[in-house]
Image (tube, rainbow, N blue to C red; front, top):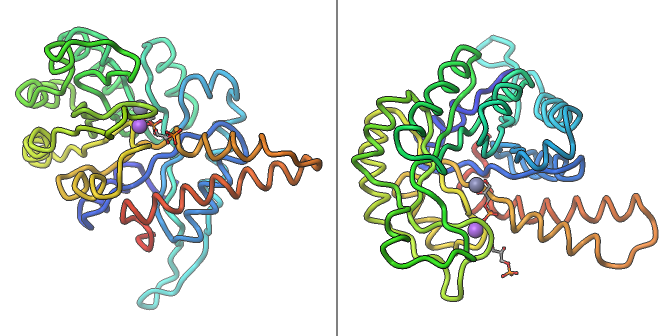
Length: 294
Ligand code: G3H
Ligand code: 13P
Ligand code: ZN
Ligand code: NA
């Protein structure tokens, strides 16, 4: 591989932008992300959720790897030397919340994994994350982990319960030191799927604190639940240190709407779905500032 997920995030850190990690489920999804990356000259992360892996299996992973490897590979002459260039795309496993599953996933050829121990008590999250982190690092795979717990829109929480789920800055420092992770998924009021009417209430002060400690340790911040976060807020998150945004719902919605419109020809159904997803992905690349950074 020419690129690692860590390099993509390092470049984003140096360039003051963020990389989109787009959940993909099938060939059209993979093609949509790769085509957007090529057209926008943007780095990108193809991301597979456990439910998508269960459905698509190794062929889905192989499809991502092959598409990433073939993305605009070319040779250029740079200061008298022939160099291989490529739109930087890596393949990431999203929300790995079981040890058994992650140990299998580590053999599948991903560039990076998320170890999601956010459902566990702090010490258990530390030991789970550290265990996988050591294995993954020995295979040169980047590790993202989560501290705090994302609330679902459907969760009925008291204010205290809700606050308790936010990432704690002191714990974050300890978590990073003990686990050796490369990227931290933060819980600052972000949620998967839709936001309640009125939009997200993100704790930007907390994000600022998290970035000031994570950046000293060379750890990149990740925001899950990026679908539905308004433009200005996305920009603020980037200014405050978010380097990876996970996007699922908005791309999936474009796909579902496209395939539910009446079309007769199957190839046309697939092509339209791919195009619909590509439009959303390309928009996000511009919003995240990664367009033109390949
Ligand atoms: O997560 C947010 C969704 O992309 C917004 O979906 O237009 O159905 O509210 P909606
Ligand atoms: P959204 O569905 O809100 O985009 O969240 C995606 C995500 O965090 C995947 O891990
Ligand atoms: Zn997520
Ligand atoms: Na969301």
